[in-house]
Length: 370
Image 1 (cartoon, rainbow, N blue to C red):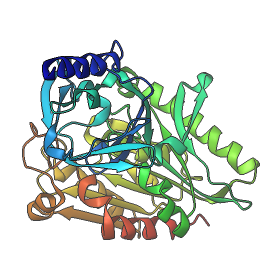
Image 2 (cartoon, helix red, strand yellow):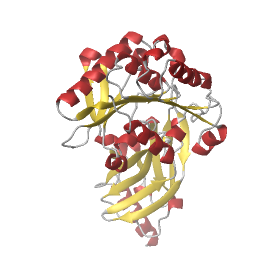
Image 3 (cartoon, rainbow, N blue to C red):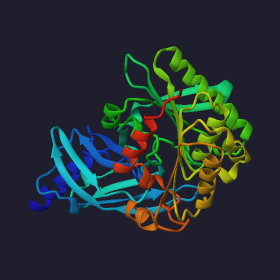
Image 4 (spheres, one colour):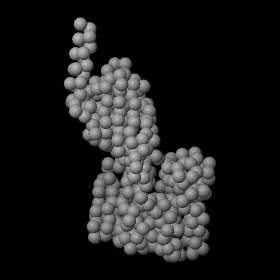
């Protein structure tokens, strides 16, 4: 009799699970946020299924496959579970920090050996929610080869515009790292409301000076539209970016010196474009801040120092250079070595967080065109 009861329970369990392993009636979403490590899952929320009593984080395992920047082949990964808890109408699983950015994850299996009906895969996840990034809207201008994400606050008065260029290859520009996202986060918008324009530039386009110039035209056409609509302050248009994005920030300022009020360049790849250094002498009226690690493995610190020296020599009275020490980069989570995912080239790990970010933001927003 007991064997029959056990068999009956097993059959009922199997019947409650759909073809993909998804228990009927469940809806699964993943809540993510853009941390200094890029897009990371904060929780997996399961609605329409009760959490059995006695289930703990130790009952779950997370495994999967992910790619990485510049890689084509996927690699396996595993992640620990920090907590599992019942919610109103369902339950929630909270992972430890993923070893890979979530948008790189290609295969995901969350299993529970003690209760197989709780298990699910990536195919079962119906929604991915990313705080702040989801508040940006797509923008396209085919005539100028421009594709971008734009965040615009709901304000009655004109506000500053921050144009954020990403690095080479980082076309997931809202999810890869914290350069565009912080400006749009609620606490920063409360202190410094602004519109954020984040162009997305494909690799094959980024290396073309002609294409970049065309994209810059599109960016400024977007800005002009905001100004005409009374949404943007023409005296407070700022350009910033990291690596190739830092280079593009300089190039944009050189192309539109009468419109850009200030430049914030993080580890700018100025050695990749003759344009970006040959015309530095024209930026005498544009405040510039440069941030770079002392032992940047990709762009030698001498590039940033040389740009600062050239600007000062040309007569620019408002130039700031901040070189982060190895200790500061280590404390920010970076590791020396270009083979590391978060190498010293990633100065944004230090510059775009906490007090450092606040200092740069206050400096940037204090600059105005005459």
